[in-house]
Length: 348
Image (cartoon, rainbow, N blue to C red; front, side, top):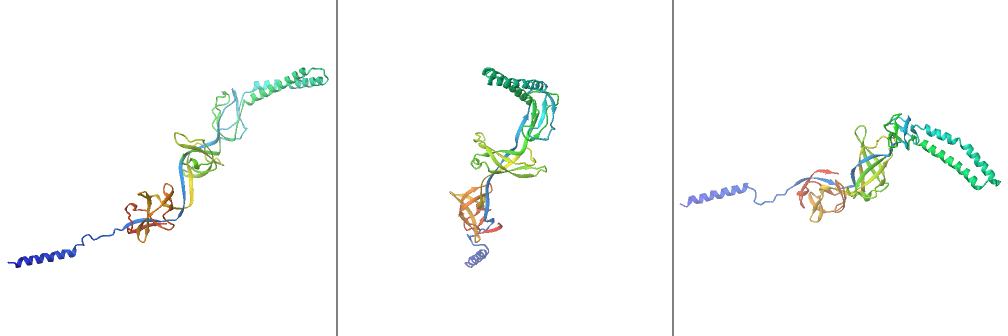
């Protein structure tokens, strides 16, 4: 009666031993290996810069008008061409003034003769000092009247105030114009001014003589880089935009760049030429410290670092790592001290 249960227990025990040999041990620890990318640390030039929108302005620009009213009798310039300072551009009728000038100038010999005779008589005490001063005053008044007419004649001439490119004219010969009538626009494009705003955080780093880079498209639609020099800035920061308006000068010797265009302006705040830098994504702020992970002997090892200047992509490291260290740049959140890692891609 007791034989069968013993046989049953024997087979159960044998089956348990068989299963035990197949299944893995319970709670046996497994070591996770993480595939990462890394970078070999080296010295680089780190530049803190900002890019803002700017406008290209002419060095000088003026709307040309006459100083007096009258009918235009001649236009001497060709639209869209270069003119020199002092060139006669247009003329209004001055015949009445020329006639008045001729009348006054005809009186000069007589007035001079009267002064000469009165001076001779005065030296002989033949006339009073008052009589001599009267004819001398009449002569000076005549000469002043002549200068006034000449000045009025000059106002009938429109001359270029500076070298530049004259634009399209708004009037024709025969038109009656006043000082409010615009004849044309004159623009000086060599040199060229670049006006741009900088954030107040950069305002202390911008000085007269600082260099800036600006980029404009050429005729083929390609961005071309040019260098300009800061020559002036506003005396205060704008309260609405919290920015400082700055102007730089560019020679534009051949006049290849026209004013009125948009420009992308690059302003450098600080540049460190021999800096050990880290990519920003490799840095972990953690519990009041800043930490990175280094690859050492096949495992990840944390290192606390002190950082300096930051740019959009990289950050200057002041201490905590050394030249030639292998910095882990991916999988940062998953890393733990001593975790085995395999480097898939190593940047130099």
